Length: 145
Image (cartoon, rainbow, N blue to C red; front, side):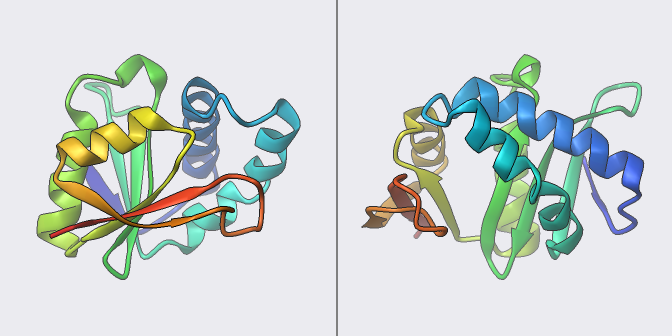
């Protein structure tokens, strides 16, 4: 698990593949068309995030990633095959201790994510009826006290 500063196209492509696999496994409320639309913006988000941490397997291949900026965990995605192995927990611990992260936003329709962050000590302090793009996906704003 290392922060990457050089974000080569091949790495970004690998992370987008992980993002899509993760979203398809966890964001069942999104249609295929919505996932493909959002996917267009993922490379830009990966290039623009202040701190991009890539989780790799024993061979050094990416299996997950996290992005943190301004004390907010902006993204955390693991390949579905890697879920439940403690890697997300390690990412959150790093986000909190190294990058001072105290906030995260999750889709209300993703109860597994909410439960994960609650187990990590985050609590909901605000809810919106729509996502940040105005879509019909309520967001839960969570913080770690």
